[in-house]
Image 1 (tube, rainbow, N blue to C red):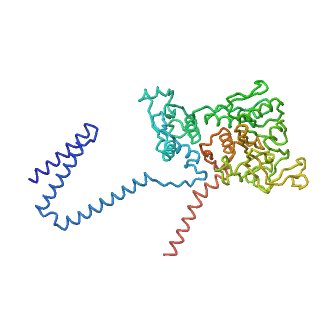
Image 2 (cartoon, rainbow, N blue to C red):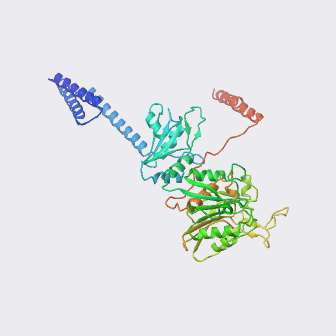
Image 3 (tube, rainbow, N blue to C red):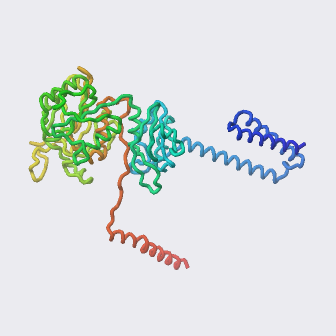
Length: 506
């Protein structure tokens, strides 16, 4: 009887396993067969143990206790691992929080309203790329990523228009978008790498339900939109990556501001605008337009009537930082270090972060009815606006200079006659190529653009940070000294100390 039950239990287990494998679906029938088989099998073992008094033996009890203890330990260990994977806690101890998504990236992913897929078309995925995508997936269940081999899944590759291995696409509802990636130069040589900045900008771009048109005024000596010193290519490229349409605007030739203009930027102009151009800008603001001004010190571009209308007063003096904080970073006194910001959505997440403003002029806001103004970047008490730059020694003169703290940037808004916004910076150099990527410079500019075009539904925050360069360039002599210390002197000292200790103990 026991042998029959034992065999019958094994047959039921095998039947359940075979049924599940063949149907590729562990439905009710295979599971019932498997459970019944295990039940019959265990019952037959119990009967066999009673017949041979196996369960009463001391060795059986000890073995059973060991098995139960081991099983409980394995269950607890498995449960701990499951909870650790599902609710993992991670600490990022790198200087720039390299392995932690920025606050902006986290907000963008957490605000996804429907599933977003990142499709990596390649034979394999770079480990660093996979870690970055896993960081995004931890923020929201709506974020997914998938590796697709275009050589095997040709149909999907054709749907997305894949041209080569390593291309990465976003899919959000019916929208498809290719990401601009950096060529991977790692030893693995697997595909292309997309950075956090590129991925976050791509997600923001594919979610847009409209095109934002940004125009940069030209024709008055403004900063060129090129990859040159003093150019704005880094600004325009970043704005384009975020899904904005960035174009040049020459009012002298066009004669009017386009109706689709969401924002106009005047950056680093050195010559006066025509009276008709200033009038066009005033009308544009009166009809709900938005304007971003990046003004260089000691220049008059002829927009005083516009600024007076908004209650902004310019000072031609140059801000000097007498604290010496810039010298630590290799900057001179004409470069102002700012870590004090106003209470405004543009700077809400900056806390005590640093922004760098070279060649800046102070701004003053005068109270105007119907206009709300907020300082964005404020210098400390050890700065002043210098009047006499020809002097060999620049020192504060209370009779001619203006003492700090001083405003370098101000945000303004009004609701009448129509809602419009204005942001004024007393520096244009801080946004040019090279300076744009210094500390929070790019963040304060891009957040200003986002606020001006009305992207208030998203929390303005700090952009993703890149790894800090901590390379040490050694001369051949220095490298030789380090080599002698590490490979010869230190091992020799350790050997001598060991010999002395051995001798004393002996």
